[in-house]
Every structure is written in structure tokens, then in C-alpha cells.
Length: 451
Image (cartoon, rainbow, N blue to C red; front, top):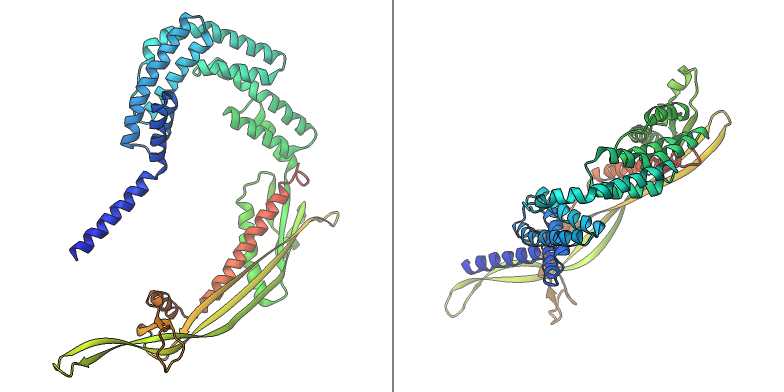
């Protein structure tokens, strides 16, 4: 018993060691070592940083970042001094920025690296005139409405002076101004939705509104919003009617949760319809075109097996009684109950004024489940699957399939459960709602519908 336990523990430790060695973090650290051995210390440091950022606090990664990072920062600063003396301003500044970026990433990951502070005054003096020239070039490009060139030039200036607010403001203008102008053009052409999201993309890139973009977004929503009334789902039978009521409620919930600023969803049931004096811009009409259930289809299969029995056997010479296991050939049955459900939902987006169909789609879903069981007149705990040629005659090919015992027991534990049918209905219903929601939202977001 002790030997078995020790073997199990050793096997577990071996599996854990193999899994640990194959983890993405350890693979990255191995590649980092290979890069360092090849003399690519900068790449090795970056790879170690990526491993540490992937798994914060990893001691091996922290050690490699510290070892390679210190070495690389010293090398980059030597390169900075060398290029600065040679008058190669851009190369010198880039070397310092690489060293500074390694410091910042390592410090953020919990590894202290230093060295750039001793050269900061020399770096500031070197970059001053160069950054000033870049800013002037960027301003000239802005004046000439070369926004792409201005963005590229000012991004280089920010690379060396990322904390400079004036340069940040110029860069934001270079990024935002062309998008702002394009959004205004769309707005003037009554493409309110496209204009709205152009301003939204502009703000996500620059991090803040530009000029009066928020006010124009509100105006675009005001002019471009439409109302869509969701009608009751037509259903031919009582069962489909009950399902359709639940589906409609879920569908409305899904549509409202999209938070589309240009669509106001209205529960346009018969009561609301007759009480309202105004009609929605569009109507969503739906029909349950199919709901088919085929329950209780049964298939029965005859199987060969063995019944295990423990008997007492007495030695005629010594009179000693011992236990012996014997297996008797038996027949048992597998029974499969299959349940099939298919549903289909058709929806149409209608313009109630023109009585024209804007779009019409149909979605469908189906589900089939097998509820398996087994039949045996004896004790299933002692039943084993197997194969034999004759139930009354022993053959050399007869065998008991001990390894299939667990699979057979699981089938005996499975019984027909009417709740499964209800679960299948819910699955098909929810899938129809999801497919209809996705299809409808894609249609509404199409440039052909809302611009």
C-alpha cells in the first residue's frame, strides 16, 4: 500500500513538472535565455518582461528581467553617449528612449531598474532643439491641412517628450480634425448614424471630445432616431402561443439591452396599439412558422453480457472452503429514447406608412436528445458486458469486458426524465431568440437601413 501511494505521488509530481515546464511563461523564459546567449540582450529583456507581465510575481522571470535589464540599459546608455558625441541626434535619442522604456516597464512589473536618471539632463539638452523642430514641422503640416503628416511628425515628438501638454494638444488636433470634418460632412448629408460613430471613434482615439463634437452627437441622435414597435408573435396553436409570449419578452429584453442611441424600442402589443395616437416609424412583425415535437421514439438493442457470482468451493481432500468468482452468460437490453424538437421564427421589419417590407428573415433551431436506459432482470451491480458465441457452450473466444463495466453502470443509472423535454424546449426557444436578436440588430446596423 505504501509503495502504491509513493508511486501515485511521484507520478503526480512528474505530471505537474511537465505541465509547469510547458507553460507559456516558462517557454518565454527559455526563449529569453536563448536570445541572451545569442547576444540579443534587448530582445531577451523584452521577452522576460512579457513573461513577467503574463504571470506577475514569477521569481524566475523577475531574476531574468533584473539580470538582462541592467545589462541592456547600460548598453543603451553607452550607445546614447557614443551617438551624441558623434552628432547623431536621432539615434542617440532613440537609444535613451529604449532604455527609459525598459526601466518603466520593469518598474511597473515590480522589478527596480535604474540608470537613465544620470543622463536625463544631457538627454533633455539634446532633444530640446530636435523636438522644437519637429513641433514646427507638425504645425506647418496642420496649417497646410496635411493631417497625416502632422500626426506622424507630432507622434515622433511625443516619443521624446510624452509629458508635454502642448505637443499632446497639437497631436490630438492632427488626429481629430480630419475625422471631425468627415463627421460634419456626413451630418450635412443626413447620415446621422455614421456621423455619430465617427465622432465616437475620434473621441476613443484622442481620449477626449473635440470642439463641439458632443453637441453634434446629441443633435445627430435627435434627427436620426427611429421608433420600432414590437408586435405580438403570431402562433397557430395554444402551445406555440405560450412559447411565443415568452420568446417575445426575451427578444424585447435583448433588443433594449443593446442601448442603441438611434432606436427606441416600443412594446407594440394590441392594447398599446389601440390606445396610442401615434404610430412607430417601423413595426417588427413576427410569426412562429414551425414548432415540431417528436417525443418518445424508442430503439431496443439486445446485448451479450455476464453475471458475476461468488460461490463457495470446498476442497474434497482438505475440506477447506474458499471463495471463487464465476461468470454466467446472460442477455440484457439497451433502450434509447429519442426526443426531437424543431422551431422556426420568421420576422419582418415593416414600414407602416408605405406598407412595405424593409427586410424579412427566418431563423430556425433544432435539438435532439437521447435518454438511454438498460433492462436486466437480475442485479445490475453484478452485470458485466462481454461477448460469446453460444450461451450454453464455452468457447475460447468468449470474454468478459471488465473495462466497460463503468460505461454499462452509467447507462443503468440513466432513466427517462420528462423534464428533459422541457429543457429542450427552453434550449430551442432561447436559441431562436438569440439568432433573431443578432440577425435583427445586424440588419438595423446596416448602412442600407440607418445611415
